[in-house]
Image 1 (cartoon, helix red, strand yellow):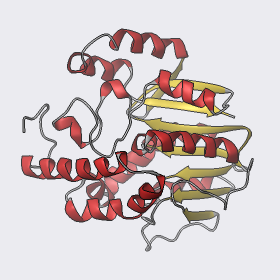
Image 2 (image 1 turned 180 degrees about the vertical axis):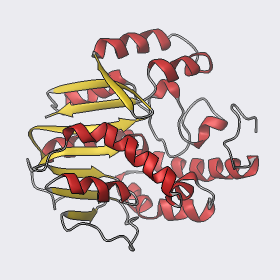
Image 3 (image 1 turned 60 degrees about the vertical axis):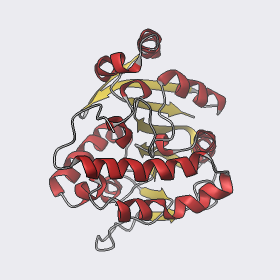
Length: 278
């Protein structure tokens, strides 16, 4: 298989190829499954992935305090301005919960929601933190209109497109009026951002759908969010820009072949960072 970009530091061609093949096979199962089947796959897919790909970058990052601190700093750059001591915050897919542990110290209460328990059991989580394991769809434990801020980082791209709409509907239900959904997800035009970037111009691994700002704006409108604030963001720095900036960039780049516009897109629209308001 031909490489489309240089290998990442510390990983061999065979390791990256194995990672790609494992994710691609699991992703194909998800894409061809119905909702009930996806629920079953969700419960085991990360265990299967990590057992077959022991050199997975997520495992490497977890073992490095420096990398964890860098990642958490960038997350605070996205979320911090929306937190207050009175906030009730819910994070989808908190993973190892190390960011949740820090962020919960800034708010009244913090809820983590995930499809599997990945928290480090040796961490003593704050009393105001609660972890909920769910099936990816139903979240009866959280009442309507009860959450001030929802946060997700690198989640939406992992959802089947049908499930992404269910997710946005759920987020709208649990947010208080005026509540905010703060999220970051890879932008379609600068991707793919999963392991398939080394072998394909389209996401074929666990990124089931990478989005554009235009697509996301339309989806949020469908699910009755009132406004969508958009930001240019990279390496912990962000600045709010009008929706028109992203729409114009996407219109121009969309006329080019991906192998040509991908390098340019990484500068113009490096990621999809937005804040949807109920």
